[in-house]
Image (cartoon, rainbow, N blue to C red; front, side):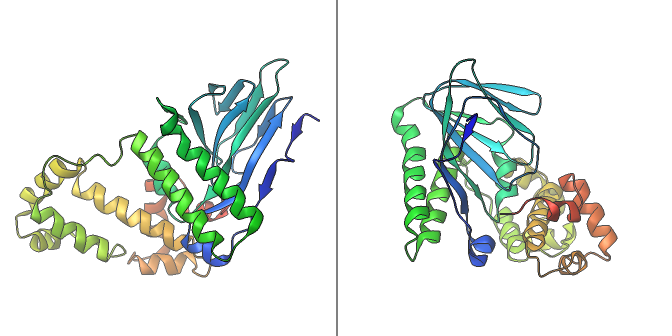
Length: 281
């Protein structure tokens, strides 16, 4: 048998978990005696795995990554073509889990394109192993709160991966009050088409001063912050199948579906319809 999925356990999330929580789609182990290839966008979500025994190569697009046992994990974007290639004469056995959630696109962007996560110490790698064991137990036993426990476990793993990439390093300086006011106002109404002049009024400083303060404290321009926030809200709304694209455009205060689609394609690289056609969690 070239590929064995006998150690893999599948899970079907409830409608509420799909909308609100991180949810696991499969968890366990897979072994391969021969190369295994997948077309892009054949499954939903991300696949986090590590090598139990054997060695080989992970191919993502045109990039090859050597994979072998050790304190390393690989986070694979399942939208992209990929292959798992055992070394000649060696069985490649991997463990891990596939997951999805409503904030997936933002995490994909934040964690970047580098798929490998290397940990210097065993204790730094251990949280991945613990999470996989818990997910496996939850999928097998299905206690009353299993989906919430799954959500918490995946959330902890993402936090650990983010820490390894230093995504949440605290700033040495306190965020300026003018910036804090603007952030709270925008995040309270992320669907609104905010204008620079009204945000400057909220901040209590002039536009030029606000622009400089935000750039210094957050390493992004006001325009970039507003575009990113609106894109995140668009993705969230598009994840609700009860809403048409036209209704999403209206909720985001675009004058037409056409202008919304133009914004979404420019910001994300795909149309709203293409985004919805991708395998969802």
